Amino acid sequence: MMPEMDGWEVCKAIREFSNLPILILSALDNPGMVAAALDAGADDYLIKPVPSGVLIAHINNLLRRSRLEAGALRTEVQ
Image 1 (cartoon, rainbow, N blue to C red):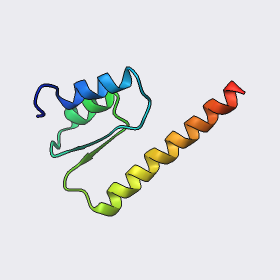
Image 2: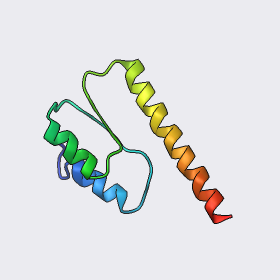
Image 3: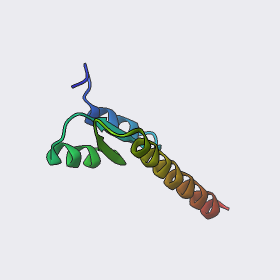
């Protein structure tokens, strides 16, 4: 529902150059949309409205996983 590119296209474009976590925050509560977002490269999908504590917990989880993966990559390179 964004102009020019939709969220799925943005996810795919980001995934071409980055592994940073992507969280989709959407008003669309449709299992097919959730699956499409995850297939496009999103790491998580939340449906609005989201309690702030839940949003923060999901963000912290994504950051924790990202840091763990980055640490594992550094260990492999050394």
